[in-house]
Image (cartoon, rainbow over all chains, first blue to last red):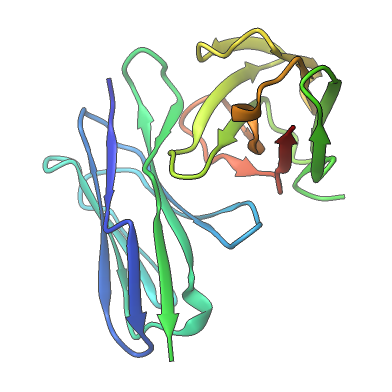
Amino acid sequence: ELKVEQNPLFLSMQEGKNYTIYCNYSTTSDRLYWYRQDPGKSLESLFVLLSNGAVKQEGRLMASLDTKARLSTLHITAAVHDLSATYFCAVEDYGGSQGNLIFGKGTKLSVKP
Amino acid sequence: ETGVTQTPRHLVMGMTNKKSLKCEQHLGHNAMYWYKQSAKKPLELMFVYNFKEQTENNSVPSRFSPECPNSSHLFLHLHTLQPEDSALYLCASSQDWGRATQYFGPGTRLLVL
């Protein structure tokens, strides 16, 4: 059974600082997604990582995937308040339910002035 | 309308009521999904429909009954729910089942009294 763990679950950081969110998963997969959710809103797709070593960047966010370590990171550079949200990673399950996404619990990020 | 829409956005119902949630996608996708998002739990997949055919039922109680009349519309019929069913119910769609980014609707916030 594929399990996805994110850490930290809560992150309070100051504007201008850098930080990394980690996403570990338990079984083989080569497709990982990062989503953002604002309070009371739906999930917005940020990145899809398709292969080992994949790196994607958008603004102050950069995501990477290491399929051998079963680890993805979401790096935040020089955080600003607008990045405050909950970030989810989701891994595509190739086990019993091909095509289904298994989500982590989410990391609630709060960026303070 | 663009993207994935859901109605109603908020719903309060008693345990003996029957209600339905509606989802519509305007993206020309072939797969649609229902998810449940509860506080302190990861996003849980409930049902998957691919080309109108149900491909996944993730051990969901029978008080939740999905219906997919065509590839653009998805319903979740609710009857005799329990207070623990209170949650945010999210609909999503993707071009195909698996190997494709899922796009989420705004969700229906359900409260069962």
